[in-house]
Image (cartoon, rainbow, N blue to C red):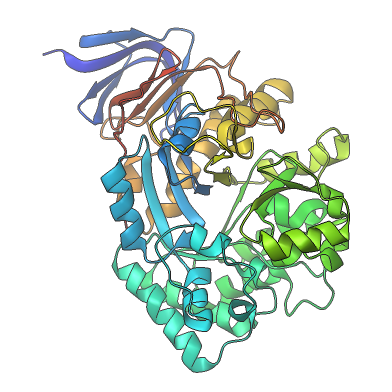
Length: 488
């Protein structure tokens, strides 16, 4: 009997088995059923000779919880986006909303320590949206010390979400940098008891703030050692900056002593966050060797002129997104820092993507292409293509098989302990989910820039999600919403 679909004659890369050879791949329904040196028969056959056929990329760190943002990501080779660093609360609301609206890629959520804290300490209602935190990060009450009873209530909210299928606990401690370290260890202990990972945006390093309650990197590895929890270190590049080698050495020592500490990074020197973030207060910008002009309001494109303007914007527009220009990508030493962050052993590629902002055009989740006034960070559209372009084709820092592994199998393994479905993703062998990306290794490239932020990547010829072609011959199928939830 012919298979539903055969991908014929491509260079098949399966990071789990080590396969890197010309093969035919057969798909029936939502499953890969054969990878063969023999020519396979299919009701539909796609000639992919000269192209790489790989597992779909898994983005551990995406704040794109809508169709427009995820369309940009699927055109970058992504088949699963997970909101883990921040998370949401309650997770049931987020899963229900995504299922009702449909998604072009698979999706999943951790529970959100910051949202639980906002609820308990500041009385902020939580809706299962990332905006719960972004829109309220400047509220002072949630950043203060909590009493034991309050900590217990925060942990109870997180535990409710774990019971509802959350993929671990997102801990934005970098946004509340004076919270006591004991609370952080208590959250890690909860994760350890439930056998789920935590995903941390680290607080300040001691080099950045000598008065920090605890060094941000030391805090993560300490919690791993004390509790046995799997501690995932989010975007090491943007929180460590030029101290990344010291942070890597610490992580290596922790791993050597049996702790489970995993890492991720993205290939950009500019970050993005809410303008109300604690670490963007004018008086602390020097810790990152930047001034107000490094902060660029996303919706208007305007850079802050001085401290006075930054203070006004933080007061009146605390939930607005800003680009934070941290490392100058034209500087060879800055590029070297980014490269070291990405090539550190078993570091996952993760984007820190964000849903586009529609500045003046009325929001329409099904509109494609996006209107010219839609803006986001270019990493939303370009992280994975940029990784292939820069680290593989231009510098040779990684070979193509290793780059694919870090974009697929490595992130799948990070989440697999909590989500059994991940054991079928990030692989390309019989029995794997038919989440597949086909790309041209010679031409794949990112096109999004800081001035044209939503230009989709090119070179991704076909992208299948659960066996459905969301991208066919480089074109997005606007009707395709085959994404499924990934739950604990």
